[in-house]
Length: 216
Image (cartoon, rainbow, N blue to C red; front, side, top):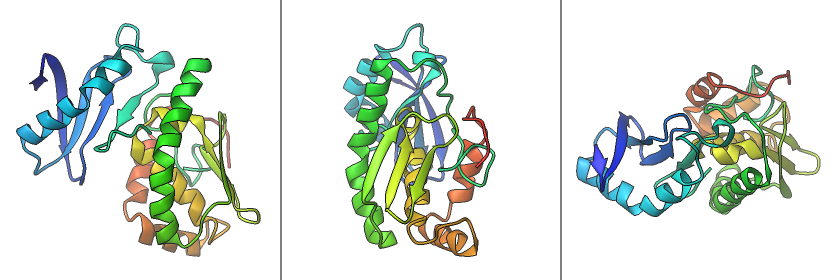
């Protein structure tokens, strides 16, 4: 599909919303759309995000994001899409987000997460019945997130800011669930099944990518 001179790769999935990202290797605009979405709806969505597309394609060189980072936007235009270390029972990193993290890349990742967090926290605090006392962002090499149930403090990996929005949501829900179930026992699994029935599929997808090393 071509929209206003921009080539767009469209993949239809059993999802509810429209998601857009820029492939870090090719620079191609990629859209994930519900199976029932019409071409017109997809084209309108892409046109609405054209400023975002041009801005973030301009930050790439030769179609490759900084260090292979992935930029993404959801149907609301938010960038963002778990906790613990890769290879553990938690999430890994779907898109490749390795490479050097200079000040600009950190700024972009932080801005993306900070833009998405208010809505995510409002929604999931109501569902889970718990709210973190503090959410801090930092670049971590072994974990996507962590939670200290005693203090209510949650930490999120800055890498999530250059990944699809649903990865950030999964990590946040995972950590907020620890405010009710401190470990990964049956109660934690039961709660996660209720909050995000598809969480295992998301985890499996994320674990297929390049991710931090180490064990939980």
